[in-house]
Length: 351
Image (cartoon, rainbow, N blue to C red; front, top):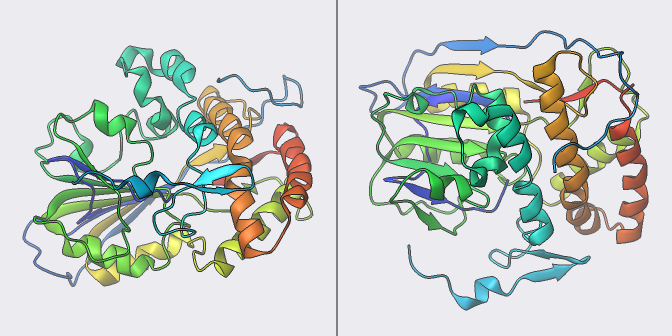
């Protein structure tokens, strides 16, 4: 989803609110000074994915500002994982080596699938998005080779590996994106990815982004729906996968960081004043069940990422938000992982 009025920083700065995609892009228009009165929405969707019936029913993994205060490195230790101390408890997901390895585990896939584009291995943590976004960081015009974009803000930049590799003047800021923005100048492009449970107020974030864009700037949101789906009914309502993500949604809501209904962002973007809202919908298979090579490749990555990340996604929300014990979460995840390996379940994440 991209909007003409967006935010992210490279002059280039990357904001590292360690929070956490149907991409949406929106624009403010070249002469816009505030909310516009006319909007245009365009949506692009994928067709149903063909099933590969020629291989086994079990998936296999193929992919292997100012100085920070010392106190920010005094991480919170919980359930055997470490978490950010800044705004303690606000962000659900770990920051330890296991999570960093998951975010950076796609080097092999990077080399195999996009070797012709000569991306450095360090950028592999975002290769899944490259595969979905035509080899680009995003869909909005600032991602074109002839773009004249200057100041860029990346919200939720994660490890920041890609940002270090791309601009020579990148700066990183550890801050809370829901607090007032103190940047001295507006941006040409704001890029946000996988922030769905990292924000408690999406309208506020979108309005703040709009207010911090130059006229004609772009906002791009890449967000994934929480619940996997299937088009053929093979993901049953009583599946452990469904139960797990329903519980995750309940826990996030209890912690005041609910998972956002992604399609509802379109109306918010238009109400705030973005023009020319463009939505591209993509399906990420949960394993290698698709027949067509592109979706099989996406499934390879998505499966590996999920198997490595499912504990990171669930352990803090379920123990903090629903009062589960760590051992109860681990028992649930045994069945969840089993179903994610099952190629007869034709599930995917819509984003």
